[in-house]
Image 1 (cartoon, helix red, strand yellow):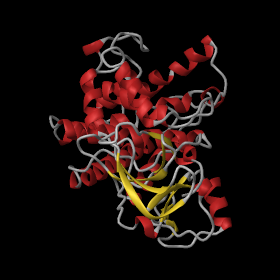
Image 2 (cartoon, one colour):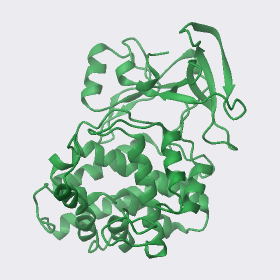
Image 3 (cartoon, rainbow, N blue to C red):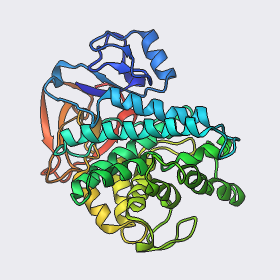
Image 4 (cartoon, rainbow, N blue to C red):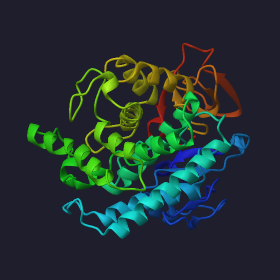
Length: 375
């Protein structure tokens, strides 16, 4: 099985995993043969990558950190925030009953996420989708970023080994809801393709205060989740906002969320810039360790996160093309790649593997759409 960008999928390919709606219903079933109409609809829905069957890669098992049904349930809960709050609504526009119901949906979802992550606690931290295209709308961007940061933060907190269940729940909810205040920022600012003016930047910065006020009185949500919303743009050297806090003044959970939010933003495209390769994003984190980000958290990230997920199509620096077939626990950023095409574009009858942890003169240069054509 492989992960292929929807834009590069072709009619006749078969799904390696079912596709679910945000309500958790099957949209297209496992092993269904894709048609041109299906692919067009999937692109319109903002589904940028698909799991595709391929006899050359049948032995590669790709598992999400959480079940697709759980992912769909979380997306649905996040989407309800957009139903509850319009971009121009007041911070207390909805009834306390509706608010309590939404808060319970998030705690129930987070509990399910934790249970599933505990079942596979020893698995590496790995997101199975890297969307290289900008999200088609703000709701899609919000949901994608929220769930990614939540999974990163919760898995890394588990890897650190010093947090109990309730603390993991608080970290997870803080990560899931860290950007909730962005709903109250004018969408034209969030999707602006050019640089923000100083006054526009001030307006965008207000999302941390909006998020704090939205969460602080939610009795079902841990109070620290509101602190994550408030502090996730603070930085270790005091260069962040809204209060220019430094070092230990920033809550550890907010430090986790801030670093992971930055990484997730870098590896995903936005309307105003392209995504950067995961290893470049990791270099940015490391270059700013101790300055912007907690250095111990950056090290834990480096040692535990598989930045190139299994099944991902890649192009190597020598021009060869293949997919990530195995991870190296001793070198998470340099996986084993199964080569399917030569640098000249010739299909290989007998694919071979390159272990990037021992072939140091070769690197991953392109992923997804950047990898060019379907292999």
